[in-house]
Image (cartoon, rainbow, N blue to C red):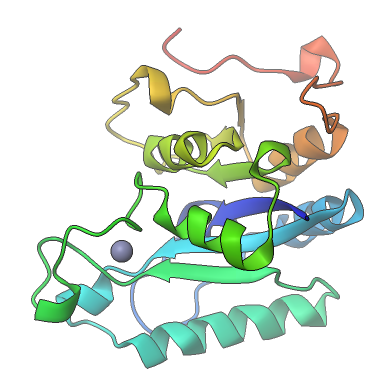
Length: 200
Ligand SMILES: [Zn+2]
């Protein structure tokens, strides 16, 4: 079995994007991903593409986004371990995608599918995202979680299942934290490196 770090594409990996244009990779992304790779984690992207349900883009567009991302990462010698997306939205206009699905976060469907297909040990894996929905998704799937406080979360509906294990300002910081964590779940990070979740 492998260990994985699941990354929300919009909040953790890239600047915000909605549409068919490839979005910009965040500046310290590559350094963080290399760190995760060296620490033995597969990098798996999980992303909402509700624009498919809303009719703004088609699944071929999502596949093109994936191809662009994969190619860009390969240029940096970083293999993409997996790419999973939810094309649904309950308020969508395209009937076949306008459903309450099990893969739209905070439902853990994307992670569970990845775990099955990639043979991921979820207890030794992490979910990194920028919203509490990402955190809840990771918790339901059995991962440890890191919340990136980069402004994507605005509602702060902080119930118990949405409480992150750690918070970090950037993907690079999250990657450093994960790389320093022991496989058994005892985080060997100097105390001054740890942050408490907000609103405590
Ligand atoms: Zn879905």
